[in-house]
Structures are given as C-alpha cells and as structure tokens.
Amino acid sequence: MIDDIDTRVEAVLARLDAQVAAARDARVGLDDGLRELRTISVTSRSPRNECEVTATAEGAITRVRIAPGADLGPGLDTVLTRTIATAQAAAREAAADRAAVLLGETAPLVSELRTSRATER
Image (tube, rainbow, N blue to C red; front, side):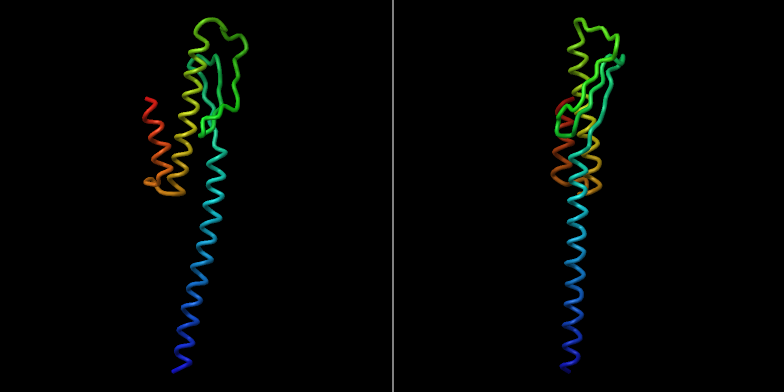
C-alpha cells in the first residue's frame, strides 16, 4: 500500500514538474514575442512618392525620406503629416495582428492597438 502511495505521489510530482517546465517555456516564448512587438516598424510612401516614412507601433518615427526632386513647396507638410499617420497606423495594425497570434484576439493589448487605430479614422 505504501508503494502505491509513493507511486501516485511520484506521478503527481512528475506532472507538476512538466507543468512548471511548460509554463517556463511559454514565458520565454511570450518574452520573445513581446520583444518582437517592440521592434515592429512599417514604411509608408505618400501617394505620389514625394516622401517615405518609417514608424513603430509605439508611434516613433524612425526614418523620413523626401524624394529627390520632390516639390518642397506648400502642401508638402500636409503630405508628410498624412504619410506619418499612415505609417504609424500600419505599424500598430501589424503589431495588433502579431499580438493577436501571441495573446489572442481578445487580449487587452490587441484591443488597445485596434482601438487606437479605429479612433484615428
């Protein structure tokens, strides 16, 4: 009878060890995924290719390029502002899509990224 109890206790401990190992692996995967989310960026071009902007999902502008020969007169500021907004929204969308894979579509982070996109429209 004691051997039977020992066997059952060992089985429970083995299951617990397996669960702890699985949780650790999941945590590492989540940490890697969150690092990936922080590095997502998207580049957008203006409709007539006057400028190109790269932005992160957090909204940071990491690169702006004005095309050689672009008209630098009135209206360029509007085109640049719209292109920045487009790049930022696209980066948030890419981050939301990736976060949905990692965390599920109903995760608060995914909802926040998608809500900020919807309120800009």
